[in-house]
Length: 180
Image (tube, rainbow, N blue to C red; front, side, top):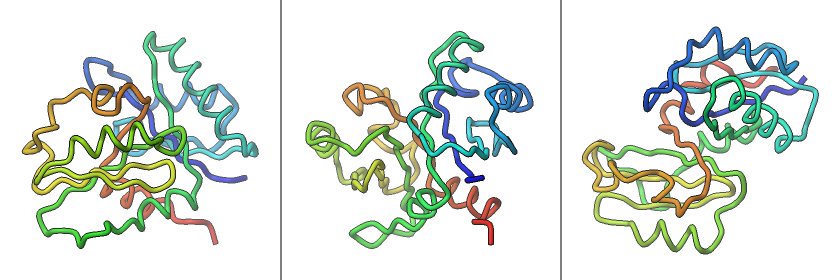
C-alpha cells in the first residue's frame, strides 16, 4: 500500500492540545493502516490503498473536526511529492542564516495568492512557488521576520494551508525513506 504524509494545521498550538496516541487512534478509526506521528505538531504517516488524496484529506479533516471540535486543515503528500519538496533549492543560493518554510496548499497557487505573497516580500522574507507548495525563505530566524506575527490566513488571503519548516520535512523523510 502507498505511504502518505498528512500535515495537520492547529495541532498542539493555540490552546488546541491532543496527545499523539489519541490522534493516531482517530486516524486509525478511518481505516488507515500503519498510522504513526512525527513530533507532536500534526505530522502523520499512514498507508492507504486509496489514491484519492482529496477524499482522504476531507475524511481526515472532517473526522478530526467532529472529534476535536475545531477545524483541522489537512494536507496530504505522497512519498514522491514529499521527496520533491525536500529537494527544493531556491532560485538564489540559500544564505547560511536562512530559514525555509513550506506552505502546503490544496492546489497550485493562483495569481492572486502569488501577487499577495510577492507583495509581502522584504529584505528578510521572500516567497517561491512550485506546484502546490509555497516556499517562504527568511533571512535569519522566523521570529525576526516582520511577517512572524501575521496571521497565516491573512498572509495567504484566506487560502487554507499549513506550514512546516523544511528541516522538519527532511527529517521526516530521513526517518521514513521510500521503501525499496
